[in-house]
Image (cartoon, rainbow, N blue to C red; front, side, top):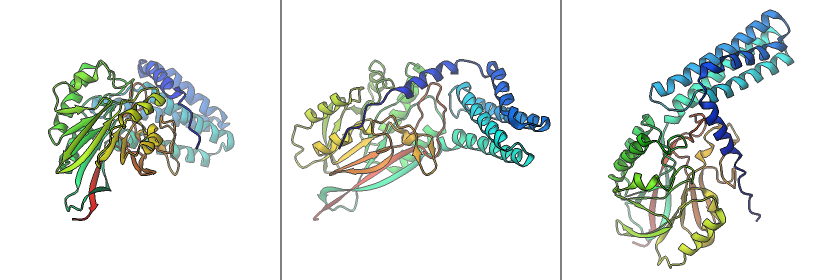
Length: 386
């Protein structure tokens, strides 16, 4: 089997560019938006149709701008308005231009207006609704223990990307309490790229982690290097009752059941991470069920090679913004879509890639579409003799 190539980093370059655009106040780009509307109207041939098409794009852009600007005011999300507003207006303009070039008639204009209204509805859903539709995903796995009517319950939480308190974080605490976990496992990215140096966000995510860790014994790893900075994360975890696994192995017993937790740092060097995994795995697991915690799914083959029973990861956000029937366009994984989300079997290893909770940061839209946030409750049930 050939190995996939390493990511090019173009996605992160785009994020940095969007961050620059995010510093421009939305009102200052009004001439650019008006210009896009005028260009979109040009191929409609007849003056009345041109005015109608241009006004439709302009009014839709105003609707997008108002919706995006209200998000931080209502405490829903805290991203900049300008980058997503520009992207949406470009999309609206291109759609209107294409229809006008192909079919410059009043029926075509009606179709265009309906499509523009549909785009506005999708934008509202993706920014106001789906990012807060936090789901609890339940999966069952066999464990090499005697059958027990009460399974061991592991709660997997990934990609918090804390930017501020929103309904999503409050819902997370509700879901975690109701799940009644025996163990909580955190797989990194506690802040987002806009808040890595924000002291208020540090205090906020610390408070969130403190409430989570009060529910059950909690083990954590770090996430992506640009997000979980080495001079920031230790301060967030300081004095919290959370065991931080930095290239460490923890052998624990929960409700009489033995587990081996292997926590691995995620770096930019995947080959080096794989070698560190092999070195950590040299010790005999002594019949314990082994769980690998690594932020990305990119060590799927290495985890199967060493014989991990369960591998928990996040990082992909399930694509965050997905297309119907196709799924993720961007996963930031070397495997692209192969392990974009959910449960996978590689040899004897079960991999679960969480869609995570939060969103990337910088100028990226605080949006989810067809990839709602999730936490995962894994129930380990014994399969041996009683």
